Length: 289
Image (cartoon, rainbow, N blue to C red):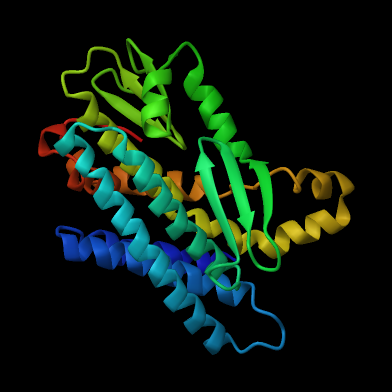
C-alpha cells in the first residue's frame, strides 16, 4: 500500500507544478484520475486477472472521469462571471459523475456500475449493475469536519440551498484572521463582511471542495483492508452498511501541508493556484484550506 501512495505523491508532484493553462489543467485532472484509477484497479484485481490488462482498463476509464472533473471546475468558473451561485448545482452533478467513474475504475468495476452524489457529509448511492438500488451512507470524517466547522458559526441556509454545499459564516476565522474564507473537507466557512463579492469567494472555496473529491479514489485502495475488518468484526460489518469510509482526508491534508511548507508564497501552493485559476485574480490574498 505504501508504495502505491508514494507513486501517487510523485504523480501529484509531476503534474501539479506545471498547471498554468487550460490545457495543463486538463492534463492534471485527466492524469490524476486515470493513474489514480489504474493503481486502484491493480490493487483490487481478481486473482485470475492480468495486471497489465486491469491497469489499462482503469487508465482509460479514469481518464473519462478526470475529464468530467475538469469540466465541473470550468462550470464553477462561471459563478463569478455570471453572479449566479446556482451554477454549482450543475457543476456538482458533473463532478459527481466524474468522481463516480473514477471510483468504479479504481475498484476494478465497469465505470457505470455505481453512481454517487454527495451533499455535505451525506452520500447517496445508485447501483445500476443488476437492478436499480438506492443506498444512503454517512461519511464520518466529512461529518466530523463539518461539525468542527459549525462550532460558534452561523449556518448560511440560503447560500446552502443556492449552491448545494454546506456553508457557515463567522466574524473572525480562527486559523487566519486575514483570510476571507476557507474550506474544510466538504464545508465552507466565510468571513462576515468580506471585501470580495460572495460569488468570487465561493467559487474559490468550491474548487477546494472539488479538490477534496479529486482524491476520493484513494478510499478504493483500502477496499480489501475494510473487507478483512468486516469479516472479523460484526460491528464494522454492520456499520459499513451505513458508512462510507472516507479515509482520503489525511492524504489530501498531507499534500496541502507539503505544498504549504515547500513554497515560500501562498500563491505558489498548487491547491491555491488551481482555485485561483477558476476564480478572479483579485483573490490572491486569500489563504485557506
